[in-house]
Length: 195
Image (cartoon, rainbow, N blue to C red):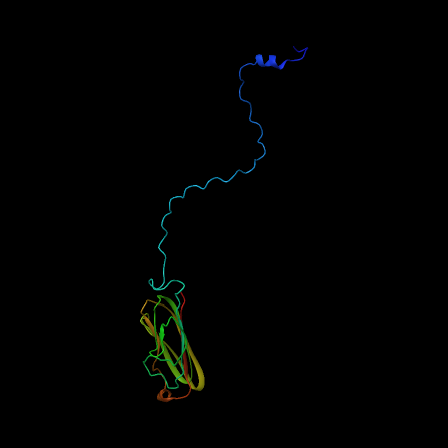
């Protein structure tokens, strides 16, 4: 057989038994991406998330949780001792939380607030920041003799709905003549919600 041509039909008749599996060949090149299959069925709903935190006990969304005021007392009379200071001009009263005629800010949105005041007068003046949220009133004094003096004070307070904040005048070392003084005076009172 080695001397002549080989007939393929003869070779097929002489086929032996199946041999053992050979070694795996090298990996071929990556094929083309197939068509996208049908979408699967929707999965099971996830766990319920934690309860959200609102501001103002459900009265306001976070977009509405705003509170700010700025008022001015322009009356030249000395504010009466141990009485709430009232105001003649309202510059800002977001959310209508401040009542200028009574001098009270009433909290409608629970949170942390910043309150500040400034007064300008040519006499000695003492003012204190008061609130149901404060165990003690915060007093500030500016002593003066015929020069315009600026007195400032402020505080950060955590308020619950319904708690009030106000300014009041008080007596310290001012002479009686200061109470009768009718020179120009100004008191500016501001407050706003921080968070």
